[in-house]
Image (cartoon, helix red, strand yellow):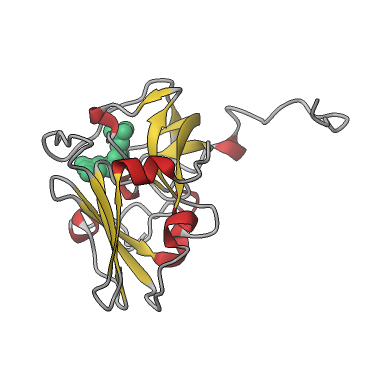
Length: 199
Ligand SMILES: Nc1nc2c(c(=O)[nH]1)N[C@H]1C(S)=C(S)[C@@H](COP(=O)(O)O)O[C@H]1N2
Ligand SMILES: [Mo]
């Protein structure tokens, strides 16, 4: 069995330490979508990483499922102030997907089926910080929450976790996505309460 350090009582919950400033806890899983839910059959689904030189790296649904997967349990923080702690996912780390991608790009623009986009530094997709997830809480990821697959990048506000993810464009210069163009913060760190431009 696992080793339990003396005095360990499980991870603290519902304390200030686990909740970024200005957030409240919810047990629900609200659905927030800027438009209609796209329905993408998995036999037509693909995920594409496009480098700054225009080279495409593609995965079909079957190819994605064949990659080693991870089961992150993470806290979600939405800019509309709800946080949901300890959510369980399954998916492929961006480290795995980026392993054979040669790039000098510093930025990423994540693109979804349906046209949603969101931007972040490429470094924030690396080092065990981001996944393309296709299962949530032991079941398939439902369409409302981004199925067949979504980006999960839980250290940033949840608008960065693009639902119905289709691909990532690697870019030498930062390019704002959908909400970032509408006044949301470019980076969106919940612990620094970077909700809107100028925060
Ligand atoms: N493609 C797409 N991804 C999206 C959105 C969206 O409208 N379209 N909304 C974002 C926002 S603002 C939030 S808070 C989360 C909500 O995820 P949920 O509906 O699974 O709670 O998805 C993010 N990803
Ligand atoms: Mo959001």
